[in-house]
Amino acid sequence: MNRVNDDYDLVVIGAGAAGLGTARAAVAMGARTLLVSDSEPGGDCTFTGCVPSKTLIEAARTGVPYPVAAQRIRDTVAAVAATEDADVLRAEGIDVIIERARFRSRDRIDIGGRTFTARRVVIATGSAPAVPGVPGLHENGFLTNEAIFDLPDLPPALAIIGGGATGCELAQAFTRLGSRVTLIEQADRLLPGQDPQASAVIAEVLSREGTDIRVKACPKAVEPGPRTVIPSARLELEDGTTVNATHVLVAVGRRPPGTDLALSAAGIETDDRGYVKTNSRLATTARGVYAAGDVTGRAPLTHAAYQMGRIAAGNALGRWPTTYREDVMPEVVFTEPEVAQVGILATQAPVGARIAELPMIGLDRALTARATDGFVKLVAGRRRLLGNLGGGRLLGATIVAERAGELIHEPTLAMATGMFTGRLAATTHAYPTWSTAVQQTAAQFFITIDGRRARTVTAVTERAGPTGVPSRWEN
Ligand SMILES: Cc1cc2nc3c(=O)[nH]c(=O)nc-3n(C[C@H](O)[C@H](O)[C@H](O)COP(=O)(O)OP(=O)(O)OC[C@H]3O[C@@H](n4cnc5c(N)ncnc54)[C@H](O)[C@@H]3O)c2cc1C
Ligand SMILES: NC(=O)c1ccc[n+]([C@@H]2O[C@H](COP(=O)([O-])OP(=O)(O)OC[C@H]3O[C@@H](n4cnc5c(N)ncnc54)[C@H](O)[C@@H]3O)[C@@H](O)[C@H]2O)c1
Image 1 (cartoon, rainbow, N blue to C red):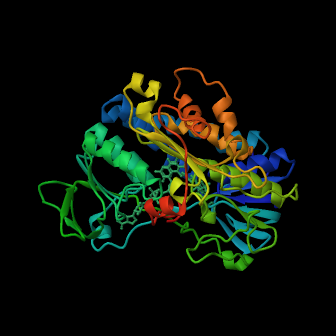
Image 2: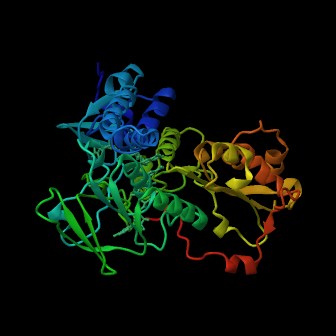
Image 3: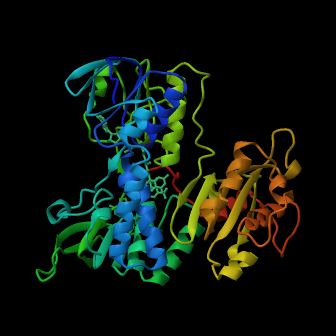
């Protein structure tokens, strides 16, 4: 039961990962907290993002028919949503209102016909799918992540616009489930924000499994397809080729949420993309108002949103000021093999840094599993006074492997705690685990192992490497 009053220490707007992280941290700090959301708590991750997509991916990997996969999605979303619904949150001490919020001023907010005051506010209203302005796309109809997981039947022919994280994950899953999938990416490679070698591995695997990949390709018009197939679409690409599909999925990134929060009434500025401007402590331009999660335009990831929420809560409530760190934020693309990244890419390594690489074919566990697609790359830099002593410090790691999403956390911990890379090499790893790949790679900073040794980045090798790799967070 809600104990709603009109005066709170903290009002949190939005109950996705960022809002939940904020509200839970705030009540743990003893703050009277109101969480307001215009939809059920859980947000994109629970209902239209991570949870349904990872359930679909796992179902496709195990080879179940589509109706079983679809039922698993419904069951899993319900199970996760039940851990964070309004009753659960109220039992944790958070007041919850399911309504849309709108600023009246920086400390007064209209919610469901009432005006609430708050000493502090955290905005956590997320983002929305971006949609390209392709003529005919709206008229012909398309899916985004908000509808693709509700399809009653398997799409016979799916065209996916956008070869980023969503596009690659769902292309592989739907191909495995039996759809004829065409993946259309405007850049010259899939996953253009990732290591170019990771892109190459994923393109090779997806294509081997039957996905039709079109890179340097952009739809310029969409028309209805043959009348005998419903629904149907014919995509005309800029290079003059065409793609026929029954369904079109748009996965070209995110845009700011469309909800009218009346930010200007509170003096909250947005950047040139429309996201809420925040400083490194996640404060907005309005005193007492903070922001967390996708709405900030920073790393659009659930764990980043949750972490930003906890930091925003602490900073808003006057706890020890904490800075949000993106340099040690891991991310994983859940294709098979998975693509995991933390810190800088090898293509971003400064001159003088050292790069160690291990192809998965050099790992016994990968051989036993017959899963040799992929590699580990570690980038180590010199310490200010200690140079390369102890192997230097870790600047970044890229892992493409069957369990890369698990393996990435050892380098992440090393980076977060400022560990020498030597610790990764010297710590005994159980044989034959996937994790030994990290140890074997780190060992190359000290010795030649199986003919491999870390190389130093010189201006020449850097120039020889791929160029034009965009920042991983750029839309
Ligand atoms: C297909 C897909 C797969 C993904 N997979 C992963 C993954 O595997 N791992 C990962 O880390 N990330 C993944 N993501 C990204 C992740 O889902 C988002 O980064 C995360 O959900 C953002 O959380 P948020 O709290 O910022 O926003 P949201 O989850 O969007 O929550 C915002 C909430 O605010 C509410 N709201 C908006 N306006 C108002 C208003 N005016 N008043 C009241 N309430 C309002 C909305 O209803 C919503 O509930 C995926 C995304 C997609 C699209
Ligand atoms: N496993 C995960 O953590 C995961 C999975 C899915 C999504 N997400 C998050 O959700 C966000 C959205 O995912 P996403 O895949 O939609 O965005 P994305 O930014 O990862 O990829 C979008 C891709 O679409 C391409 N593109 C843009 N316009 C195009 C056009 N007109 N034609 C063809 N290609 C075009 C871009 O070059 C880019 O490669 C991501 O930023 C990601 O952080 C995370």
